[in-house]
Image 1 (cartoon, helix red, strand yellow):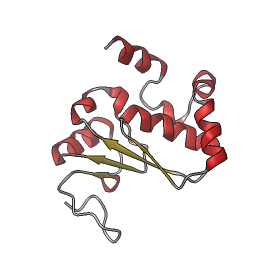
Image 2: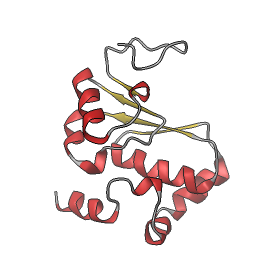
Image 3: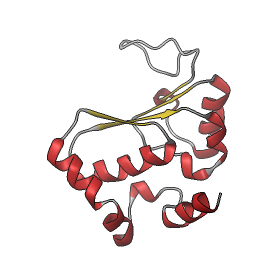
Image 4: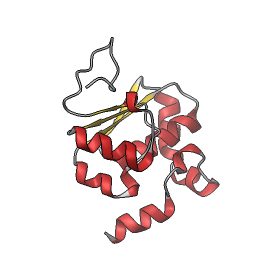
Length: 127
């Protein structure tokens, strides 16, 4: 948990919306990679990874979408893994989706629990 604490200090909640110069420097290689490759989508398989990607995408100026796939809903207890900023957040359980939205806010249409019946013509809010 020491590592998580140090990362939380360096990258507190909301950093991805307005990174400091030190944070920009820390993610500069990722930002440069995204600017060079301009993928359509990146998927972060941990909330913290998705948060880094959100910040790097914003700084790179590309139109890449960021999906956060929460593989372990227990990690949502740690602020390091929660964010309202990814374009889409996928969680394994509806209760995890509800907790994420309660703890950090965000658009309910951009957070999907397992039982969400999502298709290109619906939003994640319909479960």
